[in-house]
Image 1 (tube, helix red, strand yellow):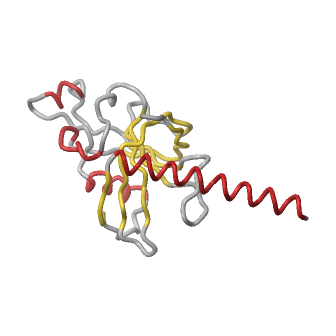
Image 2: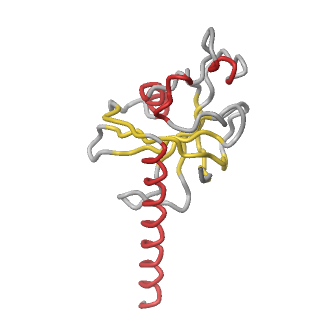
Length: 165
C-alpha cells in the first residue's frame, strides 16, 4: 500500500483501538486501554473538487503532535454535508497500526465510522453532519490518485496562466 504524507494540524483523543477483553485485537493494540489519538489535517499535493487539499484524519500513536505524518490510506468517510464531503481515513505508518489496512475491517479496532465521526465532531463542534457512507482502502487509494491528478492539472493550468501574463 502506498504511503502518503498528511500534514496534521490538530490532534484529539478517540475511542478507536480501545483494547477489547479478549482476542487478537487486544493483543495487537498492546493492551492500550484508552483510544488512540486522531490527527486532523490535509494531504499536500492533492486537490479536492473545491481545489483545496483533501481533508484527512490519521490514527496515531502517542505522542500525537502536529506536523507531517507518514500514513497509509485505509478508507473514506462520506459526510452528508452540502455539498457532500469525503474525508480520507488513514493510519500512521508505524506500530501498532501495521495490521489495520482497511476501514472495512474496523471491528477488530473498535473503529466503526461513527467513532471517526465522533473525533470529527470534537474538531468541528458546530457540525451536525452524519456519516452518509464509507468505503475501504480501494476507495481511499482511488480518492488520493484522483486528488493528485486534479492537483497536477490545477498546477499546470496555473503555470500556463503565469506564462501567458
